[in-house]
Image (tube, rainbow over all chains, first blue to last red; front, side, top):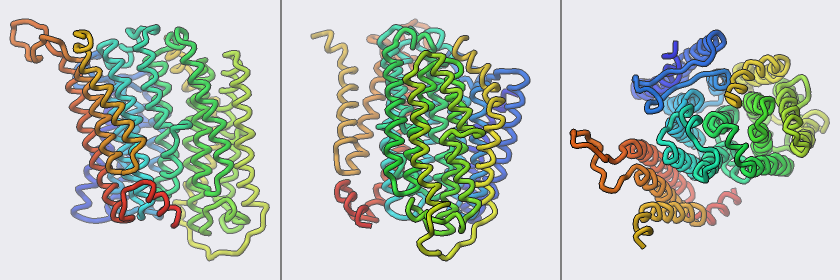
Length: 482
Length: 118
């Protein structure tokens, strides 16, 4: 059964290679092969989930080299929801990409490589392997952004690459400090042996958090995100918005509490305060920057900076409800932001509207996409019964439990900030009169399906959000208080 | 002075990291930014190898004459990281070529104007 953990990473890598080879024999074979591979991946993820539900934490030792020397793959109640999200969302986005393209085989090879890298980050129990998977997913993401035609996509991809690689290298430097301090790279062994008071540990934490903050695009390390999302093909924007930063956020939870542990924050309260302050700045700056955007893609990208700031707040608070809230926030935001980009893609494909002003009255031309966009916007603001509400509820309870009224206030303020810019967008769609009627393009069933599915998931995850949270809760409790 | 010499590898890695980061952030030429990235990564690699090094240690091939041996694991890690770095550089250079074909320049300030004009 634990072999399945390895299969989760190996299957998409093998599929990626096969798609490349198949492309030499026959073009445009990538899409059906990717569908097959990701159906398999989703089935694997579901099997692992059932296994974790029945038997709890599962771990697999690679090649018979026992930890702390060898590499270990781990699945528990915290990592499994992310594995399922990666598999499920990437399968769903394929339905979207069927119509929007790109259609070439190399595109789908990169697509599966991204899935492999992200899944690897979720299941690994080794800090160096995490770096390798982070870079695999990063490289695939740079390539995917550049798969759009035109120079600005290449420029956005290069910017993403430069910032992303600097971030990943800082993470690697942090891993170097951890290894120098303890002589091991295994997360469980690090948690047991790492000294909480040592300056070396503080520097290692700083490097690791800096690296992951770049991948999560916290303010002011967010510069790659708006350009990359604006210029990438729609299917890629949807995929990246749903998964890439989400998985980096998961890695931050895992490393903070699975490697540095709560003892580290207890011994270095100043580090915790700096992290909370950084997260608060990200929440507020993201909201203010989002409000100033005309381009809808950029507005969504800046809104992500707020949302990942909120997740970081939950992680830094360090109480069980706050960390559960952070996990729900990451998962929910992945579904919702992917859905928003999918809806914006449908609206732009159908009516050519891509700015806030051009959205005026477009709800008549694209009723389903506009409705989905409104529902998901409610989710990101945090209105019940959506998953955004469940996440904010846990974050607020976590803030109160940590006696931090200030953080509680920031969580509330984020809601009002989100309401201002999402409210403006929804008002444009539904209330304002259209300037002129454009020629309408056809929208494929797959594209509409993804948009409606994401809106439905936003509400369903909200209705069953407390069940999702109670699935992750034992694992988070165990992580925080082993 | 001998203390400083013993730390020479660490100092070199810090200098490489600082120089690399400065070039990535400050230089206007995209190609030089990629070079700066490489220098930055090399600094981190040097740090790893230095961590595993032992003065007077022999190569980690166990022959029976006893240690001390140099720690091989950081070297293996750096080999992996170098492979990652080469892949990143390859992708970056491919993008640089594409940008040059599209805009005819690699200077970031000129590119900003060209993009703003579109």
